[in-house]
Length: 488
Ligand SMILES: Cc1cc2nc3c(=O)[nH]c(=O)nc-3n(C[C@H](O)[C@H](O)[C@H](O)COP(=O)(O)OP(=O)(O)OC[C@H]3O[C@@H](n4cnc5c(N)ncnc54)[C@H](O)[C@@H]3O)c2cc1C
Ligand SMILES: *[C@@H]1O[C@H](CO)[C@@H](O)[C@H](O)[C@H]1NC(C)=O
Ligand SMILES: *[C@@H]1O[C@H](CO)[C@@H](O)[C@H](O)[C@H]1NC(C)=O
Ligand SMILES: *[C@@H]1O[C@H](CO)[C@@H](O)[C@H](O)[C@H]1NC(C)=O
Image (tube, rainbow, N blue to C red; front, top):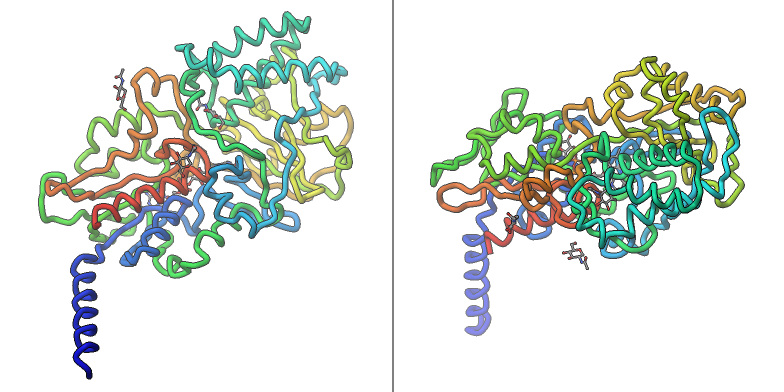
């Protein structure tokens, strides 16, 4: 060996040894194999940190991305649309590699239907719909200064607009009810009295088409893109592993935190990234963490908003809705006061939460209902057969004709699933009152040696795009980056 080469070899060896002692390859446990957990794992693996264990309570990965076989493809019980192309990490990852579909939901008008079968003046309804959208999404200057709820802000502004348009009193109220459901669906709230007007205006917006679809593939297709270059992430996942307790070492320098699963196993780790939903944290944080979480984090968990939306998919032999009309998107349901009263107290009362039945991109024979509001628990506990009976009753009532039974039906149950306790977070009136933001939900827990021990990721922790799939992805990257920075 020449002198020159041997020196090179020695330098190389020293570099390797140095890298090893620097790297340490700490043991990292990620709780949850949803988008945020998988994104964190991918980012860590890409950077050479591969001593990872992902503990997932369910018997599947994906979390609130849940595409299920239906008709001749997959429909989404969870995340369904890519909201906006600009600065959207989900869109950017697959840009040019996937040919998205489109629902036509952007600035759409449903065909407004009234519960008593009366013919509505669609032009008037659309005029009111325009006003509603303007108030909700383009009056941020005034809205951000309004200290109350979206409900109060909307009602006073909308009533003025309706007067100006000479809309009649009952239609005005029916439209208010309709747009409350619209907002409850956007935000997962039970009532828009819980939505903070000033905080409504601060969330990040991704410009571009707002309702891109994964056609017959479902949102699960994105997970394939996410892990395609790091397939080993799959080997690090253990399913059916519900974490019941995380003992962290707040008051120690050299102890390791211990994660206990429902089957009694215990796992040690240097770092834990917890990605369970805000609903799970609200419900279980007292038993999940010992010692208790710091008061700042508990206050944030308790006061930030979190709720649920629901969906029902129906498949028919043939469409009976105007599928060939290019601009037709959905039937929107307006309830007269009398019909609403009549339904209250009956087993079908939950139908008042159904806002619309819409077409589904790439499935010509499928209709999808979206719902949110005060009856979501009832909705989730009603048996499938009754869901079919009730939704068909609803469609026949509004369309004023007999319709065929659907071939199949599938529906959501996010609220009553203890691993989710709902669908996504929102900026609540209480968050405003107590000056709480999604950033407060990122608070990392350190041991006495300032080692980051528990990090929080998940949709609800993302500063800009909380509640969205891309917010979840960004939050996973952020938590992983925080660990990478610690080892730098
Ligand atoms: C009905 C619905 C519709 C939506 N529509 C859209 C949409 O159109 N567009 C969009 O961008 N976003 C949408 N979203 C939001 C998007 O799906 C979520 O923001 C995102 O998937 C959340 O990912 P996450 O990793 O934060 O949480 P999760 O997906 O909830 O991942 C957390 C994981 O942790 C697991 N877990 C929980 N507790 C424990 C425990 N104790 N031990 C072990 N594991 C545990 C859970 O099972 C889950 O797999 C929708 C969500 C829902 C529910
Ligand atoms: C784009 O998203 C990133 C997070 O992915 C964020 O840090 C950045 O501020 C966003 N940019 C704009 C212009 O909103
Ligand atoms: C409700 O959802 C919309 C759309 O995602 C968002 O722009 C708005 O900030 C949310 N409002 C609240 C109060 O969270
Ligand atoms: C609200 O909280 C932020 C930090 O999250 C802080 O900078 C700000 O001063 C607080 N405002 C009030 C009025 O307490």
